[in-house]
Amino acid sequence: MTAPALPPAAGGNATTSPQRHGRLAILLLSPTFVVLALVIVYPLIAAVRESMYRRQEGLDESGFVVEGDQFVGADNYADLVTGEVASRFWNAFYNTTFFTVVGVTIEVVLGVAMALVMHHALRGRGLVRASVLVPWAVPTAMSALLWQWIFQADGIANEILNTQILWTTEGFEAKIAVLVADTWKTAPFVGLLVLAGLQIIPNEVYEAARVDGANAWARFWRITLPLVKPALLVAVLFRVMDVLRIFDLPYVLIGARKESVETLSMLAFEEARQLRYGPAAAYATVLFVYVAIVAYVFVKLLGADLIGEARERTRAERRRKSRAPAEPEEKEAVPV
Image (cartoon, rainbow, N blue to C red):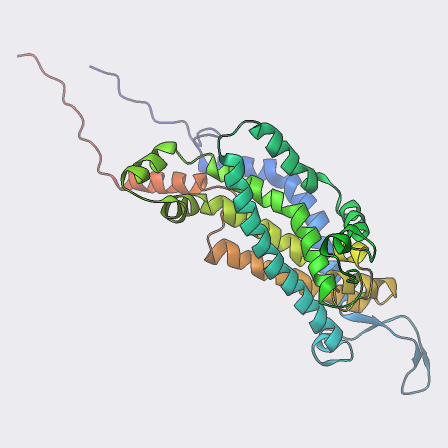
């Protein structure tokens, strides 16, 4: 006969007691929460508060001198849509969206192509992967100065095209210059993330597809693309969030207050330089909301997985085990 199992001690330990386990988790995570509150929550609240004030100087209706910041409520946001700066705001909003949609699309196409080339078994593959990292490792300001030298009037770009295009002035040519420079720098980042997704696909899957008669396009469309989708969506999300905040590349390459390439970040920076901190905070808040909405769409609607699917698989496994019927215990044979 076996001794009866003793009941667990009251409260259990930190591993068996959910209550103690939760308190321990909160205690261990509290320093992270404090840091996040200091570097994210507080600046966000301060920016929203600042966006409701406006620096005013002059005389009020009673003839008294008015100086300093005055509370204006949502007037700074209303001016973005219908005020004197509405045309400039909508132009910056269009430029930001244009660089995001067109630039990320080009980078994804080139990044996937680069990943497929790097994934192919060839001699010197390690050297190719290391060289691809070089543009991404170059600081953005230095990259902008390099491309400014290439796109100047007597630069290499005009020599190759045998033309005289003013790339770094106003016009659609300035947009093309920014897109080329940004693609050169960040397409390798997309390629490396996609390459990581390609390396976890078993070769047996492709061999089975070849036996079934699938051609190269069918294998890419039916096997490679669906299996690499999680890594690709994360790469696209990172790039979209980065391009929505683009500032240094067009600012250094083209210049400030250029209507063709002015973005929301550049507009907020220019307002802050003129000591108009209220409108600058309003621009920054609108940009934050824009980025948050795009991130929500990617995570919730498109299924971009930022932290991996292991947690969800673990929960599904636990639910499946909890619903499974308990196995009957084996009865001991009693000798007669």
